[in-house]
Image (cartoon, rainbow, N blue to C red; front, side):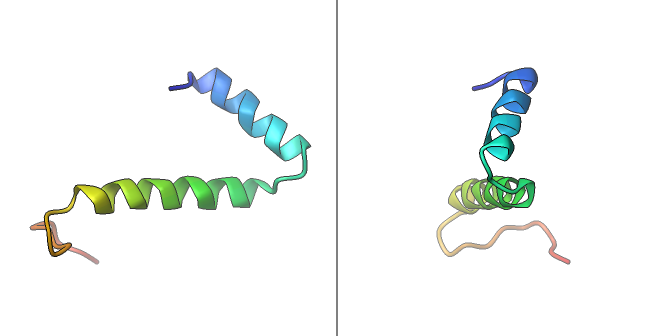
Length: 51
């Protein structure tokens, strides 16, 4: 796990290397969604309301 400061440096290096910031955010969002999906019970539903 990275500190906030270290993650900022990693993000900055990726952007300096040509990776668009939007691509970084989309990848991060997809990773969070995958982890959340993996925590759902079998069948993929939860008792939390959706929008």
